Image (tube, rainbow, N blue to C red; front, side, top):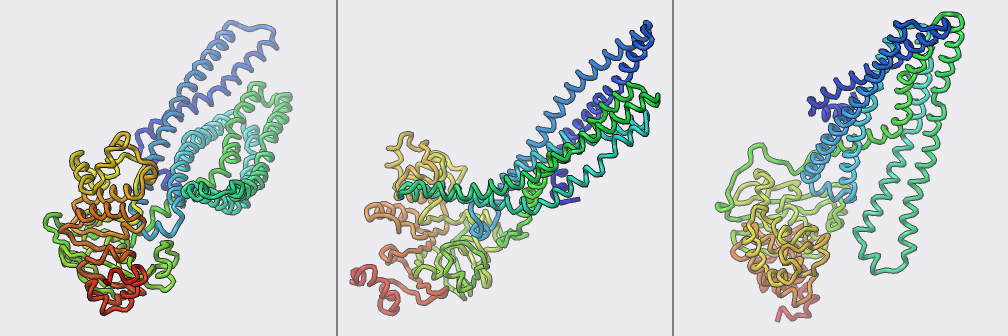
Length: 598
């Protein structure tokens, strides 16, 4: 069985009570539906015999009344049962699609950071969204369409064979060539559909890029150019799909429905004439043809879409099968936050970027093959270490390693003497507070954004963190203070306000280790001063690692480490490095014209 089918049936079987109830109802519906053509046979034959005899005896009239009454009851029952089966099929599909959505979302959260940087940000979300929709549609097709059609076909065969074998064979003769035709068309065009799906993906990715970077459009002219580019993606995808849909249309044009009815009607007329079957039998077979041809109609209608949906689920299963390189230990070390001291040691650490890594910060390192080569240093509890170096030197790699976004290729990183790979990831990250150059903010309230530092925090704790982060004053001036929505990525806040929210979030965690990755590089001097006050409250008494291009922000660090080409070039205090490291002195002079050295 195909993996996607096995997965779909697993999703259905997880709701086996609803499925078995639906199966029972579908069987009843099929019996009610199949009984109607047989009733037509009895009614037409009775009418024909009465008309020929020019009289209807009371028994025949009574029987016809009973047949009509039974037909009415079966029709009503069929409608009621059909409505319930449709609802159950929808409900089973809805629950299954929610399972797909949540499992996919969970996997995206667990997926290695490096995996997220290797693909366009919209691709993973699109895989989950498409699988969500595809699972619902395929379950709906299987339960609400294929299952009734298959049971109807089997029931039709039983009834038809019991009435007249030659007419049954006439009814079935079109099925083999019809199936061969449909499957041939599908197979011939399946790869083309796969190619077109990639064009649709490109269109979606470009649209996502444009909306994400809407500020670029707003700050530049020529709307026509933006529309032309997106129109090009759209036309290539829709044009290719249009051409393929014309080929799919051939399957509908060559549907054997007309041929089947012609054979049954044409031969049936002569069989009635020769007395081999009754008029009622002919009418019954014409009614049963709907059940015979239903599977072919379904295949011609669904298979082109079915192939696409199957690919969506296969891609989703591929995503679920991704193996994380940053793995959970089998028996994680347990250390309480109170017992954590915060001593960090890099012991002969090397890290190699895999080919295809898309992290722009690390392009230079990727080209060289190594992000870091045999790096060793220690940060004692409560000590402040600063990392300084040119872009691409390896500073951000150290941040990724120390926060376990990635794991070392060689060597060890130790926290309080224990390899960080021995900690459960979620617990390990609870020890860290991070403030980046651009922090992630959500289209939620101020309070909710701060609470990402610790979701169980009380309102008083959130306000206290904001006060410590120098954010309380500007928050109180907002329309709904802590309940104000800040827009996507915090678009309604200034750069300094965003940073102070990020610092409040870090303070709320009460971390043992603080990691600062250029937290003030995009700020003006006045805002930087406010943020520096907040940072002082954050780092006080905590082990701190700072990355900064502005050397003025790290001059008071206990130790400054110079990184170059993934290696440690030198380390010492600001005063020591000014005298001992020419590269550091050059960086200071370029930024300050010698002001700091004075």
